[in-house]
Image 1 (tube, rainbow, N blue to C red):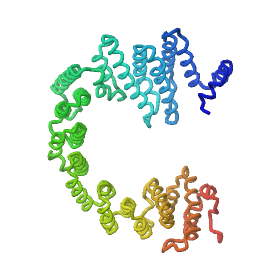
Image 2: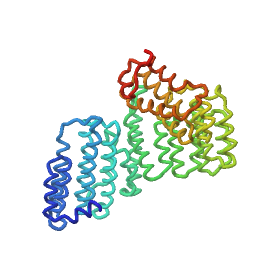
Image 3: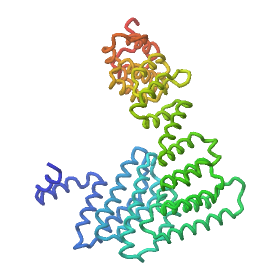
Image 4: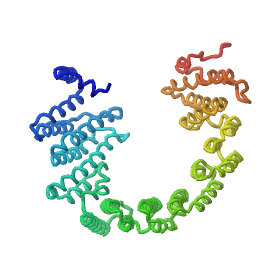
Length: 470
């Protein structure tokens, strides 16, 4: 039975009792209850009580001075999201214009909010980007009903120009449903005039021209809204007549997004790519794929892999290889030599090419080489080898994980280390022949000799920190 079914069976008095029991336990929950009570308060479509409640809650956030650290930022973002959602789901159906105004009020909180939150994970920034999309969606509806309710072009420009924290970066690029083509082109012309004026002003050599850059970002945003390649190119060339490879990549990617293969090819032919071949090859391969030139793409991928054997050159080639071609490519990977490729990269390629047996051989040949490998990679390998029923390969992975953790003395991860230790004990029961590796007893004795002082680890591992003989 769902929550809705259970609630529907309650009497009115019981529902009131539930609300009384919950109300006052948590401020965030109280705010949600207040909003829903306010939404049902007014007669007919009267939304004044809900507007007052939402306005008061937004003002409360503006007036607070509490700082939300890294651990508290997610809960704060959920609180913000709840208010934004209420504006959309509760107020918007009753009063679109009021919902537009309150969404704008929400966006104006950005300056206050970002000064007192550690948004390292981007949760709060994501909510404000949601608010931008919500404002645009409501604005489209309001403009349809009341065309003169706002100076829409000026409003969007104001948002763009007052974007200190970057949460309104997409306001112009997503504004095509709201603004007409003529309005967007007028906006682009204004940005072009601003850029040229900023570029004409005398400046110290090497000083970054913030005003010109801002205007060119504006032109680029209009180009994205209009899907206009020429305008996008203008946005780059105004300040960079000879674009660097990052700028060239942006031009190529936008052209490919539009399906303009000729313009993409033009920017792929620039001499600047000589200094950034990795990025060039990636974009060149994407262009060949969009152009439908499968044979040429496959040939270039094969050449890249032959010249630079690596998982990032193998992966796209493997995806394109037919069922008939994959065995030959697998043999090519298996026949690589350790003097041409690093052992960890070789293992990654062998697993990608479906050769776990050969990958295990590489691990066993130089087990000490894998301690520096990232723990996420080692864990994924261990899982893959478990699926393939290769306990020796798992042993190398878990020993590398445990050795690295203890050598670094990373006490916060000792609990994970104890888990690796228990995995090794369990694997020892499955292995009859260690094929040149230290057996479990010798490996543990070595750990005890080197790390016996790390008593907290041995306690978590539920094992003595010194050999029995000592």
